[in-house]
Amino acid sequence: MSPQDPMAPRRARSIAEFAERMAHFVSSEGLAYALAFRPRGDDVIIATYPKAGTTWMQQIVHGLRTGGDMDFAEISAVVPWIELAHDMGIDLEAPQKAAPRAFKTHWNGEQMPREGRYIVVIRDPRDTMVSFYRFMEGWFLEPGAVSADDFAAYLIDRDHPAGSYWQHLKTWWARRQDDNVLMLAFEDLLADLAGQVRRVARFVGIEDEATIAIATRQARFDFMKAHERQFDDHLTAEARNAACGLPAAALSSKVRTGRSGGHAGTLGPAIRARLDAIWQSEIASPLGFADYAALRRVLAAEAEEADFRP
Image (cartoon, rainbow, N blue to C red; front, side):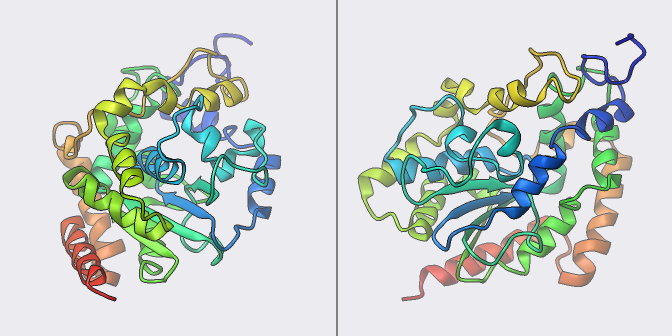
C-alpha cells in the first residue's frame, strides 16, 4: 500500500483515519456470532461503556471466582469480550476456568438479553473520554496527532452500534434495580475498593472471606500495574491490528494512574461546555440529575438502602 493509503499499516494521524481503522475492528462474522450468543441465567456479564472500569471489574470477578488465579496471558482470555470473541478465536460456549462463567460487553441495556447477571460500572463521562483517548494513543492513534478535544468530539458525534455514552448510561440505569443487575461507580471503586469488591462478591455468590481478601488485594492499582502485561489487550491487538491497518507492535496500556478527575487538565473549556450541555439534554431532562455527581449520590443511597435489606 502507498503511504497515502488511509489503511496503510500505521497509526491514525487524524480522526478520519481513526474512524476508518475502527470500522474494521469487529468483523461482520464476529458481530453475527456475538448477536447469536445467549447468556445462561447464572452467567456474570460486565457491562460498561469503554474505559469506565471494564478491565478492573474483569479482574475482580475472575479473582473472586478462582480465589486469585493469575495464570492467564491477558484478562480477556479468561473473561471473554462477547463482541470480539469470534475474531479472537474464542468460543463463548467453551468451558471456563471456574464458575460462574464471566464475560464483558460494551453493549447498552437495550441490546443485552434479560438472562444472565450484569455488573454495570459507570464513570464520569469527562474522565471516561479522556481515558479512552489515552488508551487509543499509541495503539490506534499516533501520539500527539489528534487532540483530546477532537477525540471527545468524535465520541460525541459518532454513530456506533452500541450507542453513545448517554444511551449506555440511560438504558442500564433503567435496569439498575432489577435483581440480576448490580450497578457500581468507578469513583466508588477508587474510594472504597474493599467495600465494592464485597458488594460484587455478594452479587456473584462468593462468601469466603479469604477469597474476597485475595480478590481485593489483586484488584489494587499497584498489583495490576505490576502485572500490566496481563491487562494490556495485547491478545486483542495481535488478533485485530492487521485487519485495522495498524502496525503489529501497536499497543497501549489500561492500567494508567489509578485516579479520577483527569479531565480537568486535559479537556478544553469548549468541549467541557458541550459535554455539560449534552448531559442536561440527555440525562438531566429525562432523569432529573443535574450532573454526574448527583446521579452518583442517588446510586450510593440506593446501595446503602439495599445493604440493610434482609
